[in-house]
Structures are given as C-alpha cells and as structure tokens.
Length: 313
Image (tube, rainbow, N blue to C red; front, side, top):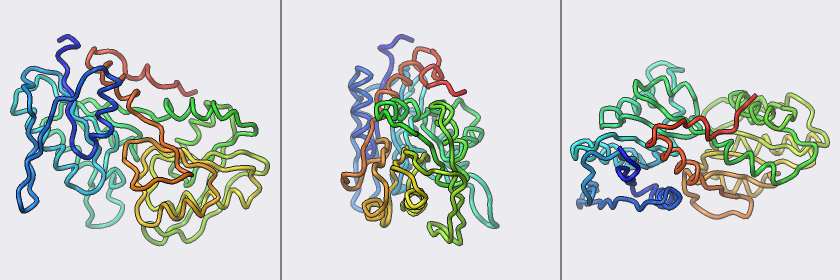
C-alpha cells in the first residue's frame, strides 16, 4: 500500500481532535454521517468507499457509553465495507480503571472493551497513557501505546524551573512520575493516600521533602480532582515554592473545576484527548494531534512508533 491508501474517520465525540489530527497528517477526514432515530438509536454511515484502505477510526471512549458504541459501529461498518486494515485510535481508553477483579462479583471492564473492539473489526489499537499499561495484554492484536511525555517534557523544559521536583499524587502513579524525574535528573516525592470509598480520601501523607522546590505532580487522568488537589495543597503546606500538575486525560467530573480553582495548583496542564466542559485560567491544554498524526503515518508506512517518544533512562 502507498500513503494515498490511508483513510481517517472519526466519531462525533472526538471530531474536534480528529480534525486537528487530519490537518497535521495532511489529509481530510473521510466524512461520516450519523443517522438518528426518535428513540435515541443512532447509525453512523461512512460516506465514501474505504474498500482496501488502511483505515484509522478515531474516537475517545469517555462517558457517555454512546461514544464507545459509536466507535464499535464505525469499526463494524468499516469491516463490512471491506477496509483493508482497520486501526482503532482511542486517544482516551475509557473503562481502563476496571482492569482487575479487586472485589467479588465485578466485571473487568477494560478486558470487555478490548474484546468488543476486536469483535467489531479492529486489527490494531492505538491509544495514549493507559491507566494501567498491562491492559495492552488484554489484546491479541498489536497495541501502539503512545506516551504523553513526548508532549509534556518539552513544555516543562520551556518553564526553565530551578529546584525542580516531581511528585506522584498516589502510590499507583509512582512509576509514571519517576520516569519524568529520571528525564530531568530531578528528585521524586510520593503522596500516600488512604480511601474509604471511590472518589473520597480519608487521609494523605507526603513521603519526601519538598521544601524550597518547584513541584510538578504527574498522573494519567484527573476525575473529580480530589486526590490531585489534596496532594497539591499538602505539598504547598510542606514548604514547596510552587506546585503544578501534568495530567494526560481531563475527565473532570463532579466538583473538579471548583476544586481546581480553590486549590494551591498554580497550573494544571492537560491534553485534548477529552474536551474540557468549561474553561479555567488554571488549566492549559496541549494538543496530542501532531503526535497521533506522526504515529498514524508511521503505522501506515510500517515504521517504528517507539521512535516518536523521548527515551527514558
């Protein structure tokens, strides 16, 4: 196949991002029309032939679940239209927090989504900063796992901060935060939290010394903002000069925006894998479009995806 054989389509929820990816890629999106029934049922229709093409279907699967269903329908439509090779591009992979059976009688949602994507027709998956990297093992097809450090690291360098330190807002994000600390030859601290139930923190303590440091918190997603804002406040109370956060996926539900505004965070830097529900002077958005466009091009030309990322020590 040649580069002209590629096609890019998008679901409605991620059309804002797919347009930027297509522009960076240098190719228009193949149009998709969504037919809607009065009861809420919908039917996406690809408006051009995709027969034999290398097709990239772009859609983040954040709530509501219609976004996931639309992606599955698009994949099935592409398969039935005889697309040559189908790649599901999920800038944000929803249900990734359901990656294990940590209590009786619960589903493993991330595995179910993996099964559905393959059943619908995906022959490859491209995503970014999975909540649990081991989700890649739920697939028996190739997974390209993009790393947001390729976007965040240049931004951090542009700040030219002295006394730089990275922090993990919880123990689960330690590996991610440590990778940034290694890149910048900086120290690392960890915020250890204890939960009694989902989205509620009972207590938090800081492991490490942040006095006189410019601290940057690192995590893959922010939902209600409770953990991140508690960690930021604790860091400033412990003597830090400033505190920022690099968070890939801005889920931002509930009172998240209110918490961010009232928190000690100087800045929250996120990616556009999920659209913001409202604007905030504290929130800065960096686009993943150029990185995904390069990854799509490399995938189509059978070149390395890993070469796009900053190499970690």
